[in-house]
Length: 142
Image (cartoon, rainbow, N blue to C red; front, side):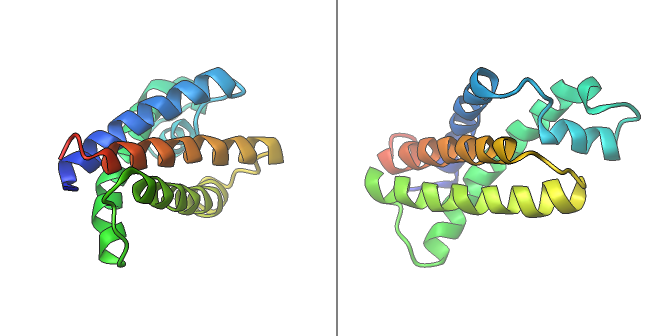
């Protein structure tokens, strides 16, 4: 059975795995959430706010896990079973990627990221979606 708890824990685990991929494969630049923190809370460059940015990203990931388990069934798709949940997680990750690229990075932060950066942004979010779907679909936390 899918629960909000499974979404929260799935979001936490998925964000941790995604962050490991970001750290291993990324370009060592601060995450967009550090730029968000620097722009709206801090008074320095994004490099000064990597840790608050990572905490903010972790909170986003956990919250998105809860949204996932509430929204996907609400639009008529099931999350019972690993295959269905991972498929839904991939679609959810694609939505997060587009919203992240178009709204957060381009509109809110006015960032002009390189195509390679945007591609990696998409890959990292796909990792998030696969892990989130796998955890939720396995039903071990619900």
